[in-house]
Image 1: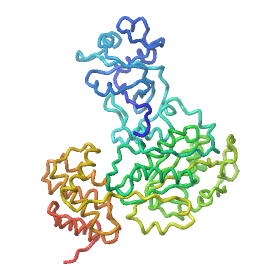
Image 2: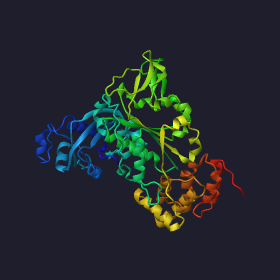
Image 3: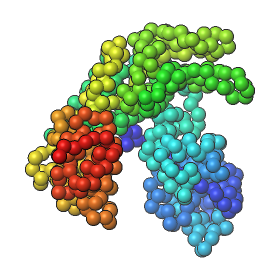
Image 4: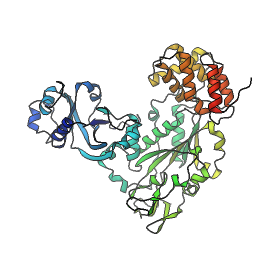
Length: 512
């Protein structure tokens, strides 16, 4: 975690008993004298707002700290949020204020809360940010780190998500704070001693480029953590300068991108029938939302997958600090995008103001090196390119296993020595087969996690893991047949299966 802020816990109120309890002890609240009969740990509120859980989720409940938030789910919506004041284990109190327990299992994990706030947020928004497949909570549980990070990125902070953000109308669009991202922002990302770029050197490059006024492209082999680094850096910058930045947005470029995705275009408006209204794209959406000034950092993953000239053409001038006029209108006024000129500016409906501190963090794989040179010089010179290297893989099998073990310990993956060495040898072959065609540890993590708990034969599961995680990275890569050929020579993998699937999936042919 890069930000020591509040966590979020999801609390479903899915049945009649839970709804009754929620109304009585959270919305209405409990009289202080009732609490005093059972507890000396009484918050200084009147009435006292209380929620609780059964003993079966005590492990999750014990992770709750004062300042965290509960968000209450019902019928596809997170209806309310409430800040945690304190917790205590108190079965007697639970039996008294929630008498409708089932199966002789009263709520004994007590959570004291501040007055709840109406959220009214569709659960799909929260669950999409968290990457959940199921769009409802299965029980009382924490929102995962990706979800909390996504909320901070979209709303600026957890507090802004709950209480609303009064800062959006008073963003300092002129000030350019100095970036001082510390190495702790990358905690949990492993950089071994033989890694080409250590944490210290990396954050110095990022800080220098940001403070020089440059947008940043992280480039390097696939699986080296470029996207996660961009997210961590953005998260830290936003949370440490929340008077300037209102959040960060993440998007992934595609070959179909045009200025419609980046700048915007006409779309049917809400309640306007067939009438078209101008809707902002990914870039302009960073500057204004619902008529309020914003300053959201923008992360563009795999930026080189798009046709740069087609999707960013109108923005070249903007990225150089000059204003532009767009071929669209709002309220019969031409849409204009201009750099900030004053710290307190009023926004007309047709205006977008670019804060002086706004930045793009983009990523691109060096496997796609050819497309780097398809970017026009006008575009490239507005960015600082920071290379994220893959570690050197030693030639000795035991050393390969020790390197993979270093990462496995960080990833909390339990694997035996043989598997560590097998995966290490696969990694070595991948990174030694063709010059400048290396992969980073993220793909190795996928292979190791896939194989570590499998009940399949080791050779079968490793072969399937390589085809599942490595082959997609080889599509369109020059000399990919050499990489597959090298993998097929390993005793740990099925040669025939790799050649067959490689030929079909990657459209490659092998010499006799």
